[in-house]
Image (cartoon, rainbow, N blue to C red; front, side):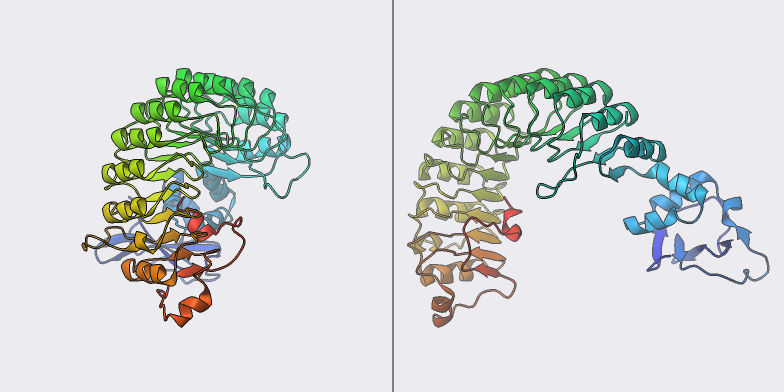
Length: 464
């Protein structure tokens, strides 16, 4: 039943150490003492194990209580071993089911009712659907009604890509799940303010909300969140292009502890909204993503530099009004916190910005300056002679047409920990030219010389 022996530290009031408990050949649980510690050893099944010297064996179900068996279960590591625990007998299955906290399933009211009955302690439920494959009819409003009525203690609910649900079903979640803390309805394209406002009213403990791709959402939802969900710390609203500065400002008025905010492709958001959230969430904000927010400019970056000294992740790709001056201010202000920065297609950015970031931000591990056509080899020239401070692991410089092999050589010399280098569409930097120049890339570094610029690499994208 078990592929490997697992040691699990635990203390039990009984039975005595050295007692071997047998359960009809299905499983052997041995309590032993090694180096002064009590350990629980789950051994492979023994069909006819001899009793311990000086005494007969005892059935484990006659000796251990439910609480003690539950203690064994909680010390198991891999999920496969936890599942195997439930295969021993009905009693063990009941205990294992009562301790299960996470469920992932397909839709269907009958299935959900059975899951609720079998796993009464479930706190997390994932019904997300694949964006490329759908199972007709998928999750529908009737399923949400069952969830609201049967999983009253649910804290986390994921419904990504469930295109069959509407405001009617989501409103029932607000009525039935008062303990809900995290809700993901990304790309549930039928949802509007109406259903999610009901969630805001009923789920006052909500701390994480993902509504990416819900294009019917407006400022009205953000206003409701600011009034009802004061514990909100994470909001993902990328692609909700009806959201404006007024909505972001309203959110900031009530939700003062935002840590992560993604409003990428919300092109009606500009400097006033970003400045307001930066000022209000100054001590909390660690990640803000503003991809393709074309109206965001230097004022936003100056505000982040002034208030958000704990900022770790910043995405401003496609914000073409941002210049060197504000990036230099950010590099100085967030020198001890900034870890990843994406600013591809920021066409005003020059070598000055990149030098300032690499020289000051000692925790910086990933940077994307793709298509910033003013970047040259000098960006990687340490003019002060002190050496770059960052331990860069990911560098994306695709379509930086002025870069040459000399610049790439400086990158390799300066950043020994580099894991990923993107030089696609750099006409002077090719695999052949690097080989001819004798450039020696680190053994663990993946270099992307060619490929479609529209295709992202997971090894790099996880940093942004």
